[in-house]
Amino acid sequence: MEKLYEEVIVPYEVKQEMLSKEKFADDARIFADNNWLKKPGKPVDLNSFLSNSLDKGEAAAIQVAINNNIGTVCIDETAGIRIAKLNDLKVTGSLGVIISAIKSGENFDIESVVENMIKNGFWISQELTEDAIRLVGNK
Image (cartoon, rainbow, N blue to C red; front, top):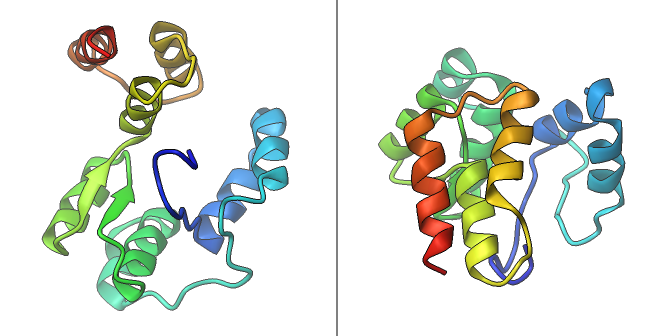
């Protein structure tokens, strides 16, 4: 990640979601131990439109980006993507970050990553899976 982004801010709300998921205990430990990610210690004040339209994590990601003049957010949910774009933010998703990491030299097997994401509750279409495989095949 450090190769891809100068700075990654994980809003407090997202951090709480990440650390509360018992079935992701190993991921939560890795996340908690990661000192490169900036993880604020308190919630962000959300504007009412964001707090009434999205879940806390997505709303916080957009609000932090707006507050800090950050141009890109990582959001996977359709409603969050739409609202981020309405706020003139570029959007990448989790799979987009993985594809970028692979293209920059990280050694991930995209098919295994997609399979694991689906197993853990992400909805990824067959078309998107095929696009991801094609994209990393052209590193």
